[in-house]
Image (cartoon, rainbow, N blue to C red; front, side):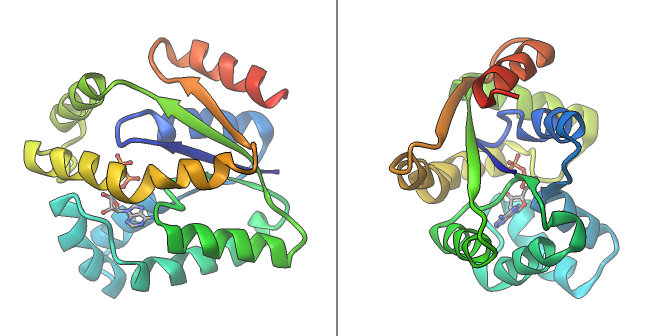
Length: 187
Ligand code: ADP
């Protein structure tokens, strides 16, 4: 089973994705974590990605499409996965759809974590103090929210046509949200 977590930055995709992946015994693929690890290791990918990430922009598809292909090709991702942080653009969505279709698979559920913008800003600003993420600065936060609305939110309509988008309120306790997700996907 392939489950996509969709939602604005700060909506809790990482937190809920982890709970969900552990509960269902699925691997979680998180492009943001992969990119941050590459930045830390100062690999060519990391050096290329860092400037976009720090600004709050998307890393270009020319870089990300290869990364997505590689991740979906891994043995542990053959039977299912929780996708966190991608697809985030139309081109990424096309690649994911096509790759799964070629294997006779598809995205089974798309969970849209719904959180009001003031709460998103509050969470990201708080996280900046705790985790020191270099893209949790006020300017980068603003850009990330704009980029989400412009490039990623249109994917909701793309997938809604297939009737697989489930909206989940993303405000409340972590356990309550996880319970709602369980209810919505029926397992
Ligand atoms: P958030 O959802 O809070 O923005 P992520 O960890 O998903 O956090 O992403 C952090 C940054 O990593 C993004 O702002 C972007 O620069 C980069 N990134 C992550 N995933 C992708 C992706 N699929 N396509 C392009 N850029 C990405």
